Image (tube, rainbow, N blue to C red; front, side, top):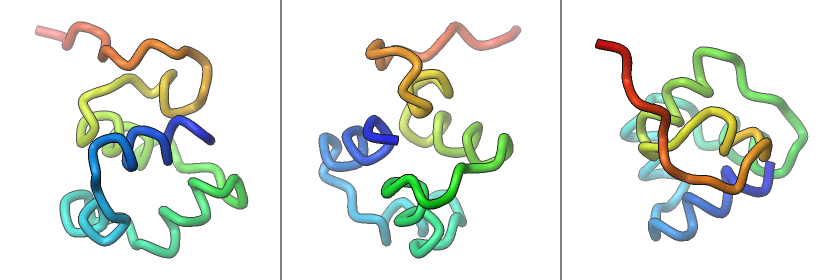
Length: 72
């Protein structure tokens, strides 16, 4: 999941900062970024909202970082 690490580094965030803002444990984030563990659907949504991007971007399915329009 190269885009998950890419967006974190691009925004100059540490895994600890992401943990403090999302509630997802730093060791779990590390496993997501290294590809050892796949995020749950719930955690993907949390991370996509935190980074203001799409789940598809986090899953490396697109290079487009812009999020989809939100439901009304």
